[in-house]
Length: 193
Image 1 (cartoon, rainbow, N blue to C red):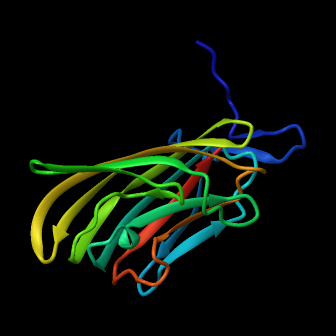
Image 2: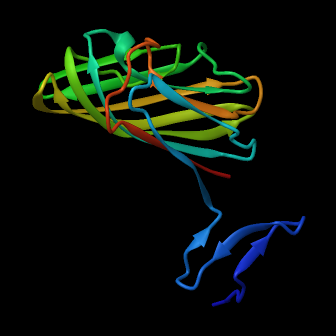
């Protein structure tokens, strides 16, 4: 077995790229781009994602009052200078007891589940670089409350988007652009690469 007795690993330019602490934890592998409170907002856009990023994860916990409309669902969009609102190849599906549904959307990666009333939803979107400026998405979500009643809804979302240039931003929001998230709603974006 070979051992490397260093605390820092640098790139060719001499910039520290990886740090290993005394417990063996390595930092520099995944970057936390920031936790965002979404309370009283329609969503958030993370910008400044470097072109070297090849894996992006957005985890979220959302509380909002919904109407029975696809435009009230949560959607994730990406961009290359500005947010792209078309050209997505995406499918989302949910399961609630014996009821289920599947929906496609070309305007973004959406969580296909909506109902009238308060909803608690948590999950993740995971983007992985494919080639060129193409990205594949997969993710899961769970809704634990609908109109004040406890429920058990699970869902998934998958898809693909091809961008013109390198991805540099990610947006999480309610699709209609006006509905706002309630207190305690939050999301964090991580990237690697």
